[in-house]
Length: 107
Image (cartoon, rainbow, N blue to C red):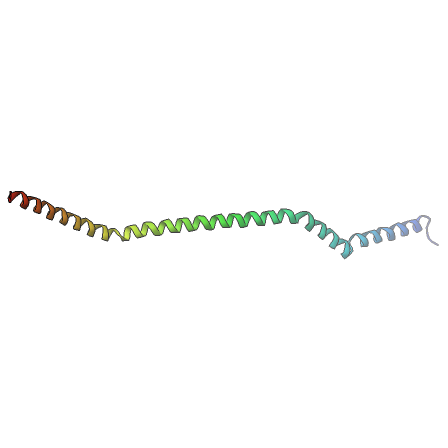
C-alpha cells in the first residue's frame, strides 16, 4: 500500500511535468520568437536605414576625394605645358621688346 501523501506528490509531479512540457512546446517557442522579432524589428530596420545612409554619405565623400586627387594629379601632369607656355611668353616679351627697340631706333 502507498504511503499517505504519495498520491498528492504524484499528482503534483505530473502537473509540474505537464506545465514544463507546455512551457517548452515548440509552438510556445515560436510564439516567443515571434514576439522577440516583433519587438526587435523596428530597431533593426532603423539601424539598417542608418547604415545605408552612412554608406551613401561615405560613397559621396570617397567620390569627392578621388575627384580632388585626380584634379591635383592633372595639375601636376600639366606643369610641362605651363613651363612651355611660360617659355613662349618670355619669347613673345623678348620679341616685343626687340620690336619696340627697333621702332624707337627708326624714329
